[in-house]
Length: 146
Image (cartoon, rainbow, N blue to C red; front, side):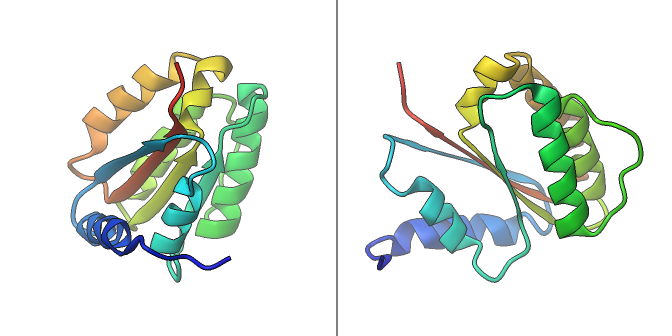
């Protein structure tokens, strides 16, 4: 499938990514289902190293297990012990982004409401504590729903 008519959006996402090399940036991408949010984000990161976390409806500990495996594979860092809570994953990534810039995409972010509603306040709290020293390009994507 051809990807067209998204030059302005791509440019904005790439500009934010470049800014995140010196300071953390958070971008929220929302819209109706099936309009190309994920594709837009992935296109904006083409050629870059990035983590892509898809929040599916499963237990938090199982999601964390998937996320940790991806972190170790993509970032080539060792993680010892078991991580069962997303706030631990996010805290680990914020700390690591103080050493190397990290692009983190969390797709279907709104699904954390079903997994563990406290994730929203945990992310906010950790972001506020670490965003000044960290170099993270955080992209949260989700569908509009009522």
